[in-house]
Image 1 (cartoon, helix red, strand yellow):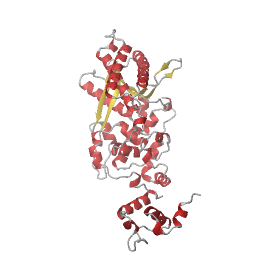
Image 2 (tube, rainbow, N blue to C red; image 1 turned 90 degrees about the vertical axis):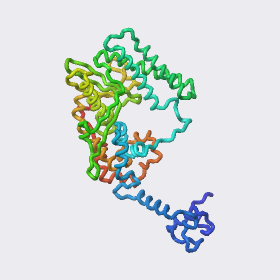
Image 3 (cartoon, one colour; image 1 turned 30 degrees about the horizontal axis):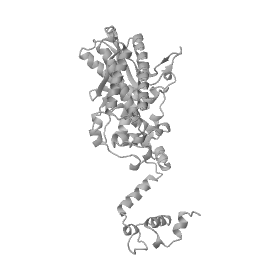
Image 4 (cartoon, helix red, strand yellow; image 1 turned 30 degrees about the vertical axis):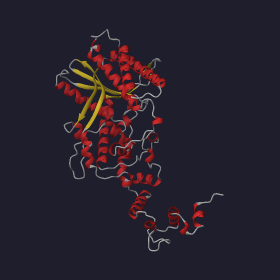
Length: 435
């Protein structure tokens, strides 16, 4: 019959116990291990068994904070304090929209991945033929070369009628496949062949749909994979800049890469569309809601960056002088399809229209400003908002204490997170929900 630990330990003389058993016995008896032990008179238990008392005291203190039900988060909850050194070294080089999105999803995840730069250890036997991130790079690379060739040859201006787009696409894709096979060991050739067919199928479907849309709308691809950098000279940066406790201006900058900017000229005016390719799953959620919550910030930043790029192109004389205006900005889901009202399948996209953007951009940038303040002050707790889905695929779930009840109490009561909680519950009006 198995016996409980109390029955095992309390039936023996303490001098017969192992150090581990003696420690458990003392804990159950609420005896401080720093007190002199019975086996070595005048010597503490920890000293007798070679345990560092300083380390024990620190651990005991940490445990007290971790198990506390006080209403303030501690350093053990992600409140790390002043971030000026990191801010100067990293943030001022340029913060990406995706990094801020990570903070919007979970500040602790941002701290682990962007500040400490930790990553999960991949198990070789669980690695797919191509990791998801590599598939995204593959799609982007093929599409960049494809549209780049069409632009160079004047295809969209009817100067290269001899070009057969699908044949061109397949040739470019095959080149990428060959490069991958040279650089990466292919453990399962049959699965790799299936993956190549899948990629080609998605790209063929998307390009066919996209070229037809370009012809119908008149918006022509003009800039591909354009890098942009927003600095103190830009109005947006001045609008959302934050200051340290010493009231020193923080010269934060932002960087990004826009997949595609399409242009349409109408007299002296130029209208533009921002296109961002996505290889993930399509979501029906209106983009404005996660945008104002700080969880989908790519398109908001790309809109501003596109304005910056086009103004520079006008200054250089590459675009005629005149007014430029946004038509829309879209996530285009290359690996998905959706049926229209006529039953025809096409590529799904999620779009922010110009009118909606003008209505909600103020709230979006207010959210970004709050995030920058939290980062600058070193406040990186586990997300206080309820969303179990975002935790399912988090690579830091093994070191997360989201289910720890004392921590939940502190997350709910700490006044410093009031604004973050409010941001996580922001919504848009039903009128804009039709976008």
